[in-house]
Structure formats: structure tokens, C-alpha cells
Image (cartoon, rainbow, N blue to C red; front, side, top):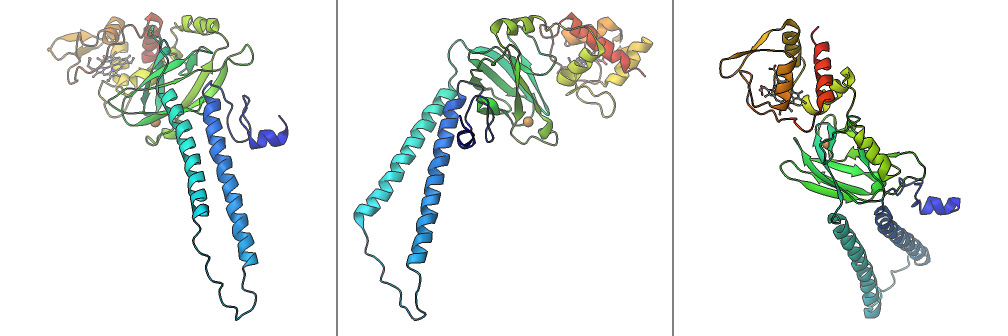
Amino acid sequence: MNALGSLLLAATDAGGFWLPPQASEQAADVDWLFWFIFYLCTFFFVLIIAVAGYFSWVYRRQTPDQAPLPSPEHNTPLEVFWSVVPLVLVIYIFYVGFTGFMHLSTSPAGSYTIDVVAQKWSWSFRYQDGTVPLDGKLHVPPGEPIRLVMSSQDVLHSLFVPAFRVKQDIVPGRYTTLWFTPKPPPGTEPVEYLLTCTEYCGTGHSAMMTQVVVHPTRASFEAWLGAQVPEPTIETGERIYRQLCASCHNIDGPVGQGPNWRELAQLLQAGGARTMTDGSSVVVDEEYIRESIMEPQARIAAGFQPVMPTFKGQLKEPHIGGLIAYIRTLAQ
Ligand code: HEC
Ligand SMILES: [Cu+2]
């Protein structure tokens, strides 16, 4: 496509000056309607300005005492023409928009489903085997419909992937879904596209973004998924903390829904004991932490509500090892 073409249409796989690349099967249809409306408006804008300019020149007052010309009579054929033409155009736009909307609202049967949880101010993704990617990115296989089942931990958010041309609100207290078919990347490397929150959700809103990683093949996606059991490192623990635990556990400062982790770390280091709601006391060691994560309802620390969800199935042994390693660093 020549330079003018790409400037005007800008609707290519590679993206252009005006729009990001069309990285999903659905993108081209969305763009088509966008450009149709855009050029239609441009056409009528130029037409109206040109005619208005022409008339104001041709019918300008030529001498200071010239009287206004009589207004023309009403013209039925002309009025029918300028009512019916826009009506047909608007019906056509509605038809294309509505069928496109219905198509994007209903995911095909057998779509690959991924759960998405939005919270102030991060995204977390959970795969059907319970894997939560620790890089915080949404990894997807190419060429097949992907269905996101989305929920919010707190306020209204909205998931937007500009390169896929899909966007959907995430409303507290209900599930919403979104689907798309990522195009296979041109090369053999995974390609990343921006995924961002597009509903103002508080002071951290502008930082609530991550990437969609489209793998070149289904096999490379499967290999990535299989390798998600990480090393039990401090960084692993810290990342899990930020993604899954920080909403309830602060490190310092005001006590959230759960105990502060500085205090927990100091108890762990000193071999101190924690009093439970039933009055018993438990030595805080690695096994207590492990149990608190896998079976939080087994023993409830005094002064707290039994609100912590179990992470059984979601966190594997290396995750817990990483969390404990991270908690140990907080003892100072
Ligand atoms: C919905 C809020 C919530 C989330 C999210 C949460 N916790 Fe908790 N957690 C609690 C509450 C409340 C308690 C205290 C009651 C209890 O013992 O179950 C607690 C207790 C604990 C304890 C025992 C602490 C102590 O000082 O006795 C550990 C360890 C723990 N959580 C680890 C985690 C980890 C690890 C995560 C993230 C993977 C996590 N929690 C996520 C609410 C939460
Ligand atoms: Cu948000």
C-alpha cells in the first residue's frame, strides 16, 4: 500500500499512523465501520462547507441598498431526497454495528476460557488448571477464540485491548465476558500488545495496564503454561504478594483485613506464638504459614474475620516456598 493509502486507511495488519495493528480476526470489521463513518462524515463536512461557502459568495449583497431576495418555495422532491438518503445510510450503519455487536457479544462454543480478576490497580489471569502467570501478563494461543470471564474485586473497571478492538466493562458483583481470536504473530516469537483499564477507577488507574502475549503456536503456549511452576525465590513470593495478598495484608501501617506481614515476619523469626479466636495459641512457623494459605479456615487468628480465601489448587509448592522466603525478608 502506498504512503497516501496507509495514511488514509491506516487499517493494516501492521498498524498505521492512526490505528494500532489489527491483531485479532475481529479487528478488520470494527475498523471497516469506523472508516465508513469517518469518510461519510468527511464527505458531508466538505460538501456542506463548500456549498455554504459558494452560496454566501454568489448570493452576497452586492450594493449597500440591495433588498433580500425572496425565499424559495418549499421543494418536496428535494426534501424527500435529503431525508431518505441519510435514513438509508443510518439504517445501514445501525445494521452493520448491531450485527457486529451481536457477533462480539457471543463467544463461539468451545472457546478457550481464561478467568480475569480486576482490582485496584492490577490484573490477574487464571487458567483452567489454576495457573496464575507470575509475569502478570495475559498469555494466549493464536488462531482460536479466547473467552475472558471477568470479575472485579472492588470498583468498576474495563478491559481494553486496542490491537484487538475489544473492550468490556467489569462490574463488581457480576461476571462479564469478552472474546477475540488473536491472529498468529508473523514470526516465530511471541508478540505483545497493550492491555489496559479504560474505566477511571482511582488514583492508580493510569498504571493499571499489562500486556497480552500472543504465542506463535499452540505448542509454544502449552510449553509456557507447563513451565509456570516457578522457582521458589524471593521475587516469586513478592510478586504473588502484590498480586494476590496485598489487598488484605499490609506490611506496615494500618492493619487491613488480615494481619500485617512485618509482624508475621517478626513472629516467624522469633518463633513467637499467635493467639487464635478459640483461645489456643500457635507457634508461627513455616507450617503454620503453609496451613494459613491452603486452609485458612482451619485456624483463625484472634481479632480477625474468617474471610481469607483458600489458595489450594492455585498456589503450588514453589509459590509457597517463595512466599515464605519473601516473608523472611520482612523481619528486619
Ligand atoms: C480477602 C482477604 C485476604 C487475602 C486476599 C489474603 N488473606 Fe491471608 N489472611 C486474611 C485474614 C482475615 C487473616 C486472619 C484470619 C485467619 O487466620 O484466617 C489472614 C491470615 C493469614 C496468615 C496467618 C497470619 C498470622 O499472622 O497469623 C497468613 C500466613 C496469610 N494470611 C497468608 C496469605 C497469603 C500468602 C495470601 C496471598 C496468597 C493471603 N493471605 C491473602 C485475609 C486475606
Ligand atoms: Cu481499573
